[in-house]
View 1 (tube, rainbow, N blue to C red):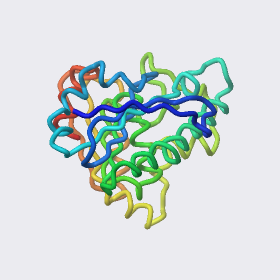
View 2 (view 1 turned 180 degrees about the vertical axis):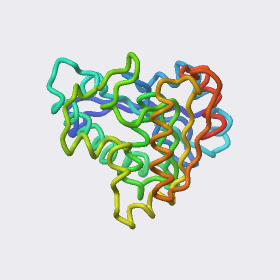
View 3 (view 1 turned 120 degrees about the vertical axis):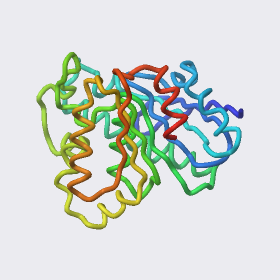
Length: 242
């Protein structure tokens, strides 16, 4: 299985960023790491190993991106306004730097957005905001409104709200979209959500499904037994849903 390491200075984030690429052909997968995770986590947790057959067969090429969660949503030392600002810079990094790199080395037109835990939020958020860029989105064990507290998972914006927050919370902005062209673009994506039946984020997934149903947008929700919010479950999920 081909493996490449890349590192460059990101003008959007004004820091060095790293990523790993697995495979050399097939649909391109932008794979977002879990909460406060790193670009090497999925390799270390043998999740990439679970995808080895699809990668070596040329079905998928995986781009394991890094995160800046500790500088954005999980940076409690800065004002929430900066947290969402840093997240927006991160999205620009993904769209203006990572995706062009992927397109330059692989001409396959199919791009999939995927992630686990907070990575599922990143995957779903970027795909719903820019659906024309993706053919499929897979959210595993995710929550889709980071301003809602649930159990020991707190509101990551500390009660702060503005338009930037609103337009980066899928369970907020999707329910109010009226742009028929945007809805049509979302409808063209294969949308897959998977979550454990006792995962604290189950309600967030139900909410997103309700919104998509109200908009007439086709999607699939798969519920797993237990919490299913660990790498050993994600190793099985990626084999089924990616």
